[in-house]
Amino acid sequence: MCFFGLKKNKSRLKNMKFLDIPLYQVEYVVAVRKHDNINITSFDGIRALDKNGVILTVSGTAANKFLKRQGNLIIDDGAATPSIAIKKLLAHRGRFIFYHNLGLFNLIEHQNLNDKIKILPKVFLNYQHFVAFAKNTSPALIEKTKIALTKLNNDGILKKIQFKNPH
Image (cartoon, rainbow, N blue to C red; front, side, top):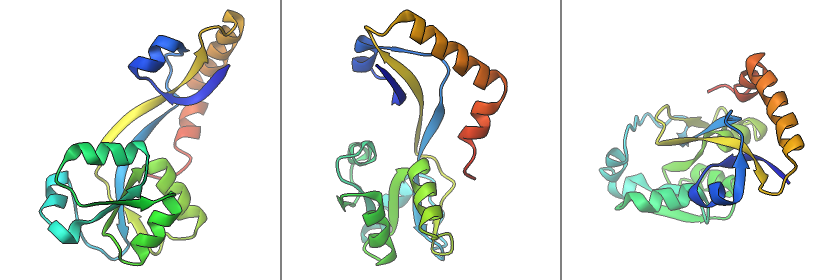
């Protein structure tokens, strides 16, 4: 079994084999309404806003769990999907959406919201995603995948795919 786009962690490293070349990087950022002139560079800046700093996020996600570990933030994690969080932002039910850049860029683009929502430049958390295999995967399949991924990386194709969406 092969998995594309997994974060390495202790549990997965015990049970899976990861290739060394990252597929892409995930960056957790905040989005705001387009005409909000706020410039946030830390969670302390958001905390200082008190009730004007409500952060919307998606229930049960890594983003939600990370936010809760930061402490003393006003978090609204009632959205079941990122699309719902965006609707809540546009309805002024929060000032920020905290989620990963890949999901936010995709939603903003596909829902034609570039004139309504912007992503602030501060990255609050980042990590890489990799290709991983179940421990019982054929070594030949792992090697073929490694060769193909190495070629994509060396030819610059992997970077082109990673940066297809503007940052």
